[in-house]
Image 1 (cartoon, helix red, strand yellow):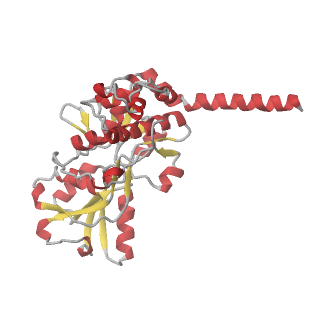
Image 2 (image 1 turned 45 degrees about the vertical axis):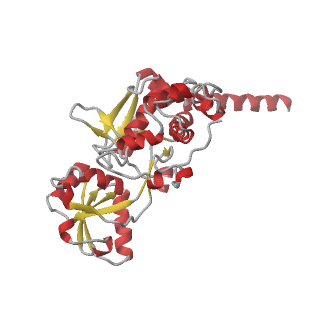
Image 3 (image 1 turned 135 degrees about the vertical axis):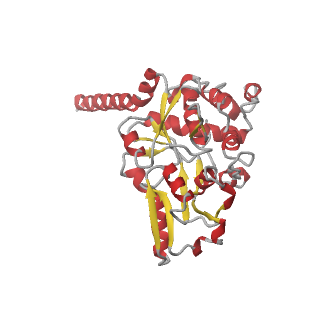
Length: 339
């Protein structure tokens, strides 16, 4: 009996070692190739958008940059693959990218049936509608019979169907795979309405020939929690992506910024010491250096800095923090403690 118990224990230990080896695959591969490969949008100002030299910026891009800083101590160790809504999940499932960090809504089906895990929410959003001011429309309830432009393969199509059918209103969907195709179709008058996440509407409005001729209607018809996505079965990589976002939120709550991070290393606050690697081995537990938090904040910033720099009130998008404010300031952004 004792021999049988020892054999079972040995088998369990071997299984655990095998599971740990499997779970480390993505991070090991990233370290070998020397960069994080991120799947991003095809161009959404404020979230993931390339300039004329191919340099990517945005809130979603900064998640990738933060991972580069955490793993390599260098935020530039991230490369980007532009993906349409239709392409994104296949690219992640096939291993073409290490994670998706592009305006992607967390839903039950995506989290359970596609072999994927959402690592958290870096932007709480909701679907809205944009129309020309000349239509004289002030509410989404006035859109019966409208032709509506949107992206195919998104929750946006489903939300429109739910809302209009529930109210028994007629509508016509004009759908395209690429985001720029949707913008062009709307701008040329092929549809009356453009619908997507509200943040996306503010972003895409900047691409219109006369942005001031268009308004975003006040109604929000859905919950769209947007965040990075990884493949299932790799807990180490899942944890690193998740805790990278949590660290940036905790840093904002603790008042640690890219500008004061060096002086904050000598803080007497134990929570600050932990996120900056002065105390504990939290980075080591994630498979990176214990200075991972310091590198993230120094090179990328805390969550508030990232929000303000990319989409905040002083940017062309001019988005207020709203529900994306910290829980302690009236919002719902909340991170578990690093301890």
